[in-house]
Image: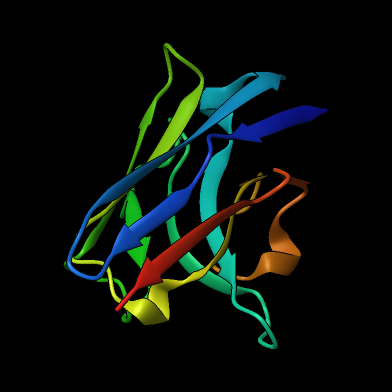
Length: 125
């Protein structure tokens, strides 16, 4: 079992930055692939980014096209924490953001076993 707790999101103006963090407890954090997803009102949950577990030897990060070049995912295995640095934010980035843990390296939400409670990010124009 893995418990995930996201930091508070917030309200930011377009063009601004925000960093989300997600603290994990339970099983060995470094063995899990960690993802960020988001869900806007009236839309399905969508993949944002993932960072691979310590045992993965291939590509270690992957981003949705909509955030590539603006968002950066990282992890600190010593602190059991995954981060999402969001720069150049746009109003269309407004959503509830979720972190999730998986034993698979996948961008599909179906592949993630553990989820945080979600945190609201609102970008004003």
